[in-house]
Image (tube, rainbow, N blue to C red; front, side, top):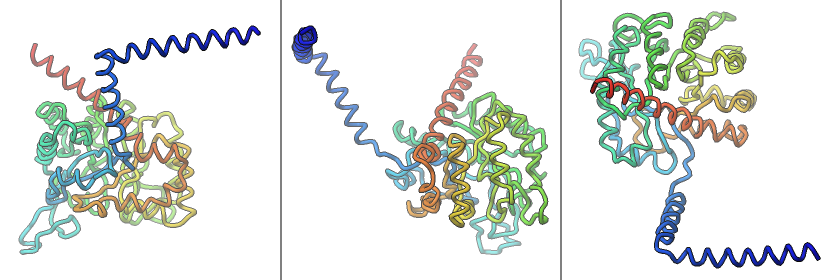
Length: 379
């Protein structure tokens, strides 16, 4: 009987609450709020469930050509949510005495030198600023037009940030050791031990910039059984900059820089070491996907590693000036065997959420740094 009384009292309270809610719902202010909620719900329903965010994308190629950013938005379509937007910091020289009338469109099309093309940062900034505010939400521009052997590189990065406040989120992809490319770059060869590189990464940590660094883990044709030649220098560099968010592009692999025998063991040791908690890895480039998906055994080994450390890997296409969505998403499709072996949480983190977490954090920090410099200048 006691429970019946409580039940009756609960029913009376419910009826009273419904009556009060009905009265409130007729008020103009509530109807406006209700309309706002409905609008928000409708907007959420209209927002595509993007398949991926792209941490590694080149809008321009080695001759600084590429699709207009508005056209690229159409290529992204409803498949790609956000993109780390950068060009290529190197320009392939068209040397008439090397190529004649044949204009090289890629760094493998000529033996002529490459040189740093700093104007690429202005090109990326102007492309971004030409978008509507809503369209800008889908891009996180990156600074690339600096020479990593130059102690003045940090001045270039600061200058770009202060010339285009509110635009850039990070630096890179920039290159130290890269098969076929490094030897073609005019001037002093880049090195992992150059103090200029330390200064660049130190500045990135101070400002909050995400740093995407390409460095091959080994040379093109290493001696049988030898340890990866650049591994020691690379890990020392990473450990020296714990306050900088660093993404090691391609996990150190390349077109012909194959995974060393203990590659996944090396990655596992870095991922498990708190000294490298600030280091992430992207699995961009179809040339990397060919190693990961070469057979079921390789794919399973990679999937097991990523499932153990799902917050430390990011997907990127490494597409260069694509002309259509099919070409742009080739690498994403190449990884279908990997997606199938990842657990649901790992798949979502690698494809989308790790990107959002790193760049959302970077955007807050970089804007704060810019504002602080603006305030200091105005005083």
